Length: 245
Image (cartoon, rainbow, N blue to C red; front, side, top):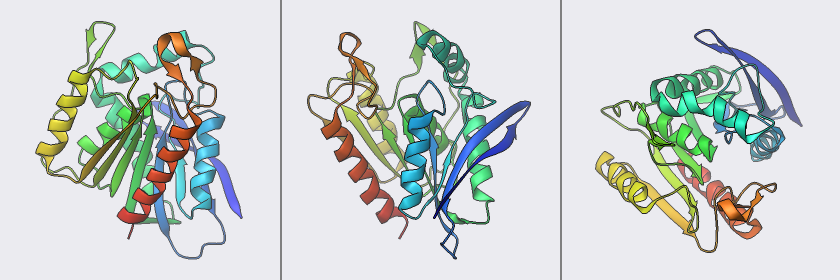
């Protein structure tokens, strides 16, 4: 039986409301997976994915990055909410680290087996969690963002921790307009220099937000691709099974 609940937690002065899902029938502590949503916040898609992860036997925790569980109704509002976190990587790390600490202390969680997955802006978010040196088994980024500039504004980045932990699986579309080749090459070098186990898969004929069934903006390169979405989820599943052994 999958149990779900809204969990209130804090990060500084921000009141956050995450979404927890786990199988109540499991008697032993289980591996946990933190989920970071796309730029519109913790909506139904993220909750559905958290419940799907719980059915695999994981403790799933969908993080609230914006506070009060706010979900952006428009792209303009999503941009307003995302921008401060994108530009201040310190703040972004603090928000996702709060979720990490919250799920780590849950009695159903095996604190030595925690991973994080993220979508779009959430992909960048879990990358920053990895960069912080958090004790992760691994991360998965679905059509994540690798760059550090936004509409001509430069993000204030934080240095990577001396020791990066876990493995990384990066899943992206060949036709994603938000992934310039320069950003990809720079990030690949960063991963390789870190010494971690990493892999990057590019899906042909695939744009940005390819896992989102409501993405339908071909003009801006934001399009759902059911085949790539299914393949990416299967890759994530195999990756989690491997790192949680």
